[in-house]
Length: 116
Image (cartoon, rainbow, N blue to C red; front, side, top):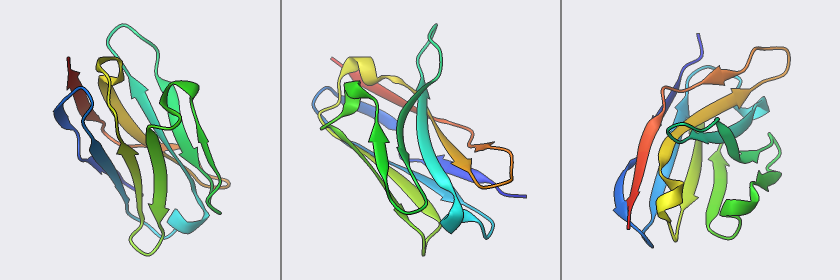
């Protein structure tokens, strides 16, 4: 059973930085696409950033230039480096794993709160 465990959330002032981590168990990490989603209260969950198994990245426009997604296949871990944080970045952030032939997997979420 593959599990995803997020960490690194917290409370930060506007303009600050946080780094989220997503540790995956199992042996399929290197062939998985990884994504970070977020869901703010009263809003739909949205894809923030994704990275393919070969390292191609995509970002939602609102975080381009501020967030960086990366992965370390040796550690089975994906990261989301968040800088220049804004109050509108406040949300629960979820890690997502997509491997060929398997159902997508989700972490439990980590709260990010940005104060103004």
